[in-house]
Image (cartoon, rainbow, N blue to C red; front, side, top):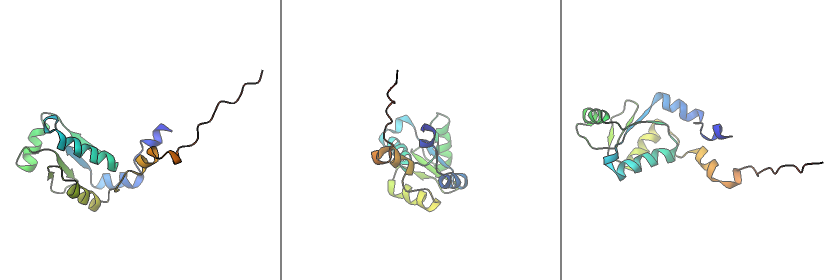
Length: 123
């Protein structure tokens, strides 16, 4: 079922309500921003992506400079620059899962039900 494979686990939904994630990421930031987005996707955590021109002013207001990416977890101090270890620790403290359990299911062929062949038609 496609819908199930994109559902966020209940525990993650609860954490996301308490500590919503906002990622400020811009095209001109390049690899650090791509790595940051890939890291959050790999962990399977829901986040709001802020990547428009007007969001750059918000980064300046939040951090005092224009360095991206910037991760905001709930009302915690924003993290500037992508540092997987620091980001991981902050997400762990907030209670986010260390990995995406649904992502594992999709990649592990052992959990995929065998395909059902069409029954032979009888004349």
